[in-house]
Structure formats: structure tokens, C-alpha cells
Length: 512
Image (tube, rainbow, N blue to C red; front, side, top):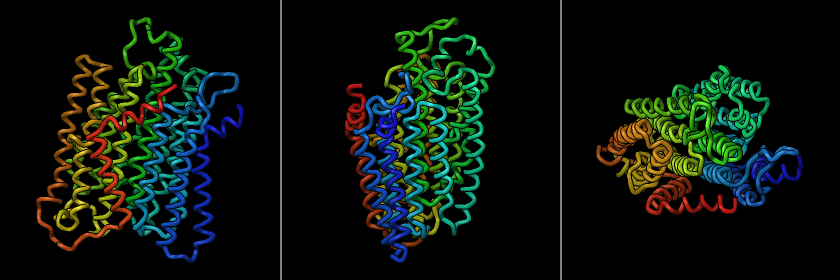
């Protein structure tokens, strides 16, 4: 391994780590006696500069990523879907950092921003990882940061409870994941995704082993926790409700982009091996291979079952919520189900990759705005209950308009970007599997999207239709409001001009 190449591939991660250290030095060393507002602004600006430096470092990464010594197999990928996911992680991190301005849940702002940057570093590693060991290290770096961020509101009992539940479930899921990885290594003798796929698709002995089923179930459990898929979702409602709003926005957006980028990496590794071994035409002893791809055996079935359970349970459970944060949590479970549907039937081409990336980037953007809007109301009303939003249109018309755009986009109403995200995702599933089951699964997803419109409208009814109990105007921090307006405008513009994001994503595949 050439260490100069390793350094070039990890330039964005290095930039974030340096920024995290600078934030700690400046906040704890030079601004100890400064006002809280000055420390917050300083920490946020340094964090944003660090993320910006990471963005600017991405074109300097080694072309083709980092390979093993004397091998063409990747250890860390660069370009393509990896670069798109990493850009999304950095952009969403910047937005969540801006939400910290005006918050008062902690006095330790330097430590908070440093943990955010280090967690984002884990997300970047996950998006690029092509080896089981690197995947696990990246997941743990991200997860440990998320546990800490959840508990950062030290005066809140809900925050401590949510962090404890999140940590316990996370530790258990890490054990499942590592257990599954160990079986994969034992079966194939490799930790590299490409070599593992090559071993699977060239050996019927490995495919017929019952340990394959154990390994894939364990891996599905571990990764299902990361994306809050049913039945590994139990941490999500309490965490979304108890974590500080900026931390909840980070968990709901950045961690999802990183985790789904990892699942995309599994599919693309399998597609790469297929194309190299068989020229894209794969046959097994049982007959022709399906058009979708991933781990062999029951992988597609496991992921499809998790997708269906997440779509149905997430949307139906959201109907009964009175807390908007918990509503967003169950909504996130449902959205994870939609994405898992495309991952269950993952195409050999970039069709599924592009549809999933489009969805997770636009969903992450919208979710950050939703949590930011909820935080503004919560800061004034002292609650995130639906009744706290009564008469919001008269108390802060601009914030109500932002909430209208974001919630309708989450429901998939045209011409907002959420509609195109779902359209592309469901179309990708039908392109890969146009038979009866594929049509049935997409029909179920569309029906569940219709259900989601009901509970989003329950919030909007209180915002625009029902009278306010308290007519006191709700004032938002200028920075926070500017970020929310920017996100709402982006949702509208990307919805009216869906080709903008698609064309931008296409530039990362040029020349590959």
C-alpha cells in the first residue's frame, strides 16, 4: 500500500479531523471566557470551513481510489456514487451545523461541533469503504458520535434516556454485524467485498452452505439498525424525540446517506464482479440469473421483507402520533422501506444507484429543514406536540410556508422534489423487476405514500386551518430562518427542475 495514495484518497476525512481539532483548540483555548453566542458562531464557522475544505479536497483524491498491494481490488473507492454520497454528507453536515446557531441546549459547543465533524468523517469512510474491516471502523466512528450527540442535552431526561436506548441497541446491532462479517470471512477467506462476491459467484459449495443464510441474516440485522428498518427500528422514535434538534437532524440525514451508500456499495461490488466474470451475463445451475444483484442466496428476499415491513409499519404507526418528532421518526422508517425496495432489486447498471442517491440526498435535505422548523416552534412553545403548531400561519407566516413545502415534499406531492425522488425510485424497481411481484410491491409503496399524506396533513391542518390558542408571534433566529428558507427554495427548484440534480450527479460518472 502506498501511503501517499492513502493520504490522497482520505483528504476529505483529514480535512474534517483537522477542523475538529481546531474547533476544540479555539473554543477551549482562546474563547473560554467569551459569550456563548460568540463561541457558537466561532465553532459553527470553523466547522463549516472544515466541511468546505473537505469538499474542495475531493477533486484532489487519487483517481480510482485505493487498492490493495499487488491487486486491482478496491479498499477505498473514490468518484462515482462514492463522491456523490460524500458531497451529500458534507452538505448536510453544513446545514445541521447552522441549525446550532440560536440553540441553547448545551454550553459545550466546541465539543459538540467536534463530535459532529468526527461523526461525519465516519460517514465519509462508510461511503467509500470496500472492505469489511473498514466498513466496521467507519460505522463505529459514526455510531459513537451519534450516541454522544443524542445525549448532549444534559438537562433533558429524554435526551439521556434516548441516548441510552440508542447505545444499547447500537451495541447489539454492531455485534450482529460483526458476527455476520466473521462468517463471510470464514466462508470466503476474504474481507474485500469484490473478493467475497467473486468467491460466492464462482463456488456452488459456498452458496449451498447454511452458514450463508446465518451470515446474511446477521448482516441484514446490523445494517437494518443503521437505516431504522423494521424490525430493527425501535431506537428511532425515542432518539428523534429526545435528541437535541440539530443532532436529530444530523442523525436523520447524514447517517442515512452514509448507511445507504454502504448498501449501494454492496450492490455495485456485485455488479462489478458479475461484469468482469461473465460479461454481464450470469447463469447458475438453477438457470439464468435475475436482473437484480447483490449478495447471493436469500439477500434480495430478506431486504424485500424488511422493505415491506418498514413501509407498512412506519406509515401506520405514524398515524397515531401526537409528537411531530416521533411522527418524523416513523416517517423515516417508511422512507427507509421505499429505499430498501430499490436495494432489494438492484440493477446491474447505474439505474438503481442514481435513483437511490437522488432519493437519499433530497430526503436528507428535506428532513434537515423539517427538524429545523420543528425546533423553532419547540423553542417557543416548549413542546413538539401537534397542538403546539396551532395557528402557526398567523404567528409566523414564513415558517408555516416552509413547513408546508417540506411536509408536502415528504409526502411526494408534485411538483416538489419528493415527488420526483419517489417516481425515479419506483420506476427503477419496475425497470429491474417488471413482473407481477414488482408491480405489487410498487403498488404497495404508492398506497403507503398516500397514507403518509394523511398524517402530514394533520400537522398542516393545525398550522393553517385550526385557530391558535396563543397568538404571540414566533420569532426565529435569522441564521436558522435563512437556512430553512434556503432548504424550502431548494426543494421547490429541484422539484420544478429535476434535471439539475440528475445532471450534477452525472458529472461524477463522466470519464469513469
